[in-house]
Length: 107
Image 1: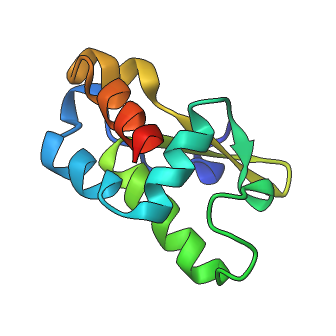
Image 2: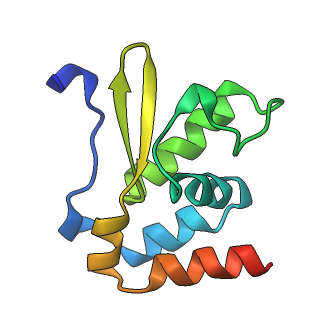
């Protein structure tokens, strides 16, 4: 991965709880995180936002999650591959992601 194709991502130690909680507070972003908990996905194949969601809105949601330290967004060919930063989040905030995702499944 060259520097020009990599977007900035927070270092593990710089991930802040308030930013993560804010990023997960939106229903569409939470649905994307749920989808990513099952494995990486190309942004163009992402079904979490629905087919009618404008590209700019999808990009905004991905940016919020990336800047909060919840996901990694990497350029793979002509697409962006999105990956949940589960290990980083579990180390910083043990049990948080599992609690949020289990609550989301119950709700």
